[in-house]
Image (cartoon, rainbow, N blue to C red; front, side, top):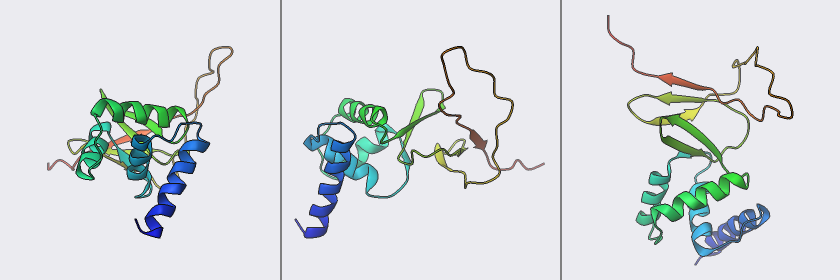
Length: 143
């Protein structure tokens, strides 16, 4: 193992520990795949495929469990987009998304003019934690 790879694994291990999770071999391998490529959006199935391709022996159920644990620990943001289709976003800051219908592709809307007004008052004892805006896109229809 080269020094750069070892440093990266230590950083991922530390990130997982600091989130309050035990850094198991599978969690570290999945976290490395998730966070090594910058901000991204992917489904559990896509991460599972990446893990198998990278030689990480992990079941799809384990991937789902890890993704939900990472989400609960604040390392990921969950986006329900297309019915039962769920994406996990490595960028946990407040931001919004474009979704391309038919391609199942999601990407960040650059920060800027998106505003939300007239939000309803939350029920007593509750507060609004986040507002997710997903703008659905499709190719223009020819007239």
